[in-house]
Image (cartoon, rainbow, N blue to C red; front, side, top):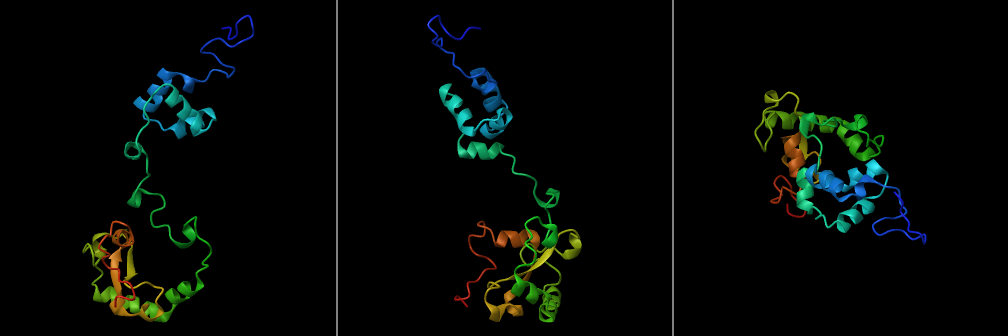
Length: 191
């Protein structure tokens, strides 16, 4: 198909770029709206930027998804034991920096900490103090000893009144934004 008129000007609706599927309204509707592909996925397929895909969405007046709509269809990965990073701690974690937190590491390797841990496990009956899961109920669920007052405060690091046994899921919840009431967290100035 000839793109230029006899004066060398591009004909209406044509341009110098090679044809690409993502510039076609029907194709874009099928991929973005029907198949719910992201602009990023489409951009990668054609080796262009997200901005190029967004340009054609606007050009064809195809409404963009809201953030909440995008989050509903986004693949966030697996959670819990199905996640390949589940329980990959220390050297098993790709973010491992070689044990650079020497003070913390030295404390957790000390006999004082081992003695305190043993006491807390017995005191709390090997049971998560938040959800009441017993260690024997879930052999693959890691349990953690949580510092109610932050580890940063040296005086309370090994204080058994400052320590509580929780399962890994509850420990993550304690430190998340979902813990709005700050359960199992006490600022050192609150005492």
